[in-house]
Structure formats: structure tokens, C-alpha cells
Length: 129
Image 1 (tube, rainbow, N blue to C red):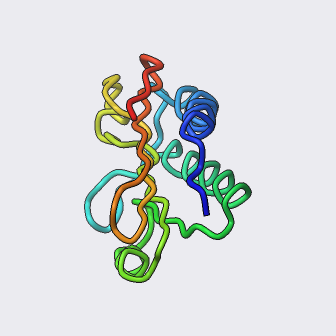
Image 2 (cartoon, one colour):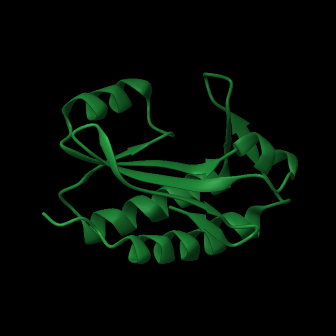
């Protein structure tokens, strides 16, 4: 299997962040997860959109999200040959507090090694790969 095109992934993450994260910035509703971390509507919506996009285009690649239970994460990390790993709002505390220091972070692992990664800052419209 050939690796997904990085430019295509960057464009998709940029579009999803503009549509799901930025409209919710500074208008944040959130809850507190069992581990004490915050969960916002932007986390949930971005997670769903990115997962749907990746499954549509690369259905054979497993998907792990920061929003999953730790047991699910551990099983995927242990067993998956190819694995997308997403933090839908990396810096949720900053996001929830209205600080413009957060990003959408996505990586593709092959047998435990990172083969593709993007961190997208939707406030500054900057992507780091």
C-alpha cells in the first residue's frame, strides 16, 4: 500500500478545522472527562469528521483518537500495522480558555514508526509536517 499524499491530508485537515474548530473558538462548551481532562464540542465534531474522512479514503487503516478509552488505544497501538492517531484539538485547555494556542494533530504510524504527521494551527493557518 502506498502512503497517503501529505498535501491531500493537509488540505483535508485545514478544511475540517476551519469548519469544526474555528466556529466554536471563544464560544466553547465543554465537559470534564473521567481523567480530569477537558472535552469540547470541537473535539467531538473534529474527531468525527476526521475519522469519517480517513475511513472513506483509507478504509484499511485503523484509527486511534485521544477521545477513545485507554484500553482501546492500547489494543490499537499493540495490534495495528497501520494506524492513524488523532488529537482533534491538541491544547484543549487553551482552546476552552480562549487562548489561541491549539492545533489539530494527526499522525500515521506503520508498525510503530511515524511515517506521516501534520500539526495544523487553524488560528494562524499554519501546517507543520
